[in-house]
Every structure is written in structure tokens, then in C-alpha cells.
Amino acid sequence: MLCQVLVARAHTRLVCPEPRSLVTGAKQGPCDAADDPLQAAFQLSPGYNTIHWEESISHPGAPARFALSRDGDDSGGSFESCLLLDHVPHDDNADVLASTAASQRPNPKYHQYKITLWIPDVQCMRCHLQLVTYMTD
Image (cartoon, rainbow, N blue to C red; front, side, top):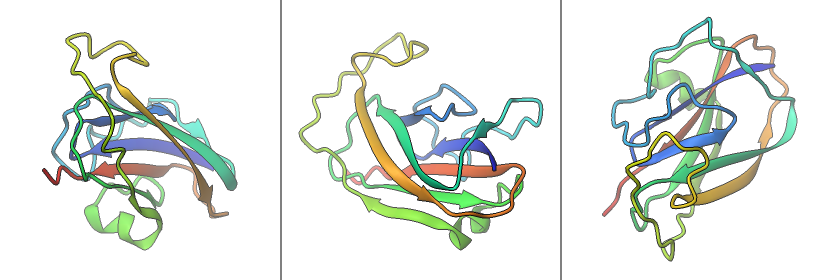
């Protein structure tokens, strides 16, 4: 399964798999950037996969969620059919400092998160993995 990755709606971005954009402040959903079929897709295998993301500005209480869409479908509803994990707790004790060097990866001032997700065995040539964190403060 090949996977294109998205992030939106808070001050987070994926590190691995690679995101479409390095922006951490995207607030337009369901994606942070338009799909570019020329961008190389990341190979995710069915089963357990460790996902790494980072937060540039802390938002206490802001849960994360991961979802998968099928074959390049960026419409908001497409992510509702394959919700991988919802209500991932936020580390409210994170001492996150904003950095002017937003293009550095991984930025040591950004708070790092990792989680292992179960990726279902679905037939998909260009699925999209979505990370959404909501600013609740």
C-alpha cells in the first residue's frame, strides 16, 4: 500500500511518514496542501507502523486523531470511513517553544510524539494518512 500523508488544523506536522508540506500551522482541512501525484508516496505495510509527529506550539488538551482515505480522495468525508485512532491524548506537560526555523526537521524545540498504529490490509495505490489535532484551548 502506498500512502500520501496529510496534516491539518493545529500546530503539528508529521515527521515520518513525510508530510505533503512542512507547515505546522495549517488550519484548512482536510489537508495541509493539495495532493501532488508527482510527490513520492511513502510505503506503509499492513500491520503495525510507528508514526512520528511533532508539535511547534503546545495546545493543552488538544487530542490527535489518525484516519486513512482511499486512493487519493481528499474530501472530508473520505477519512470518516477508516478511522485508525481517535482521541490520542495530548502531552499537556510539554514545554514547547516556537521556533523561527520552521523548516528544520526534526526541530529540537518541537515536542516529539510517536505512536504505533495498526494499518488495515486494504487495496490502495495512493491512500492518504491524515493526522488531525484540534486546538481546544
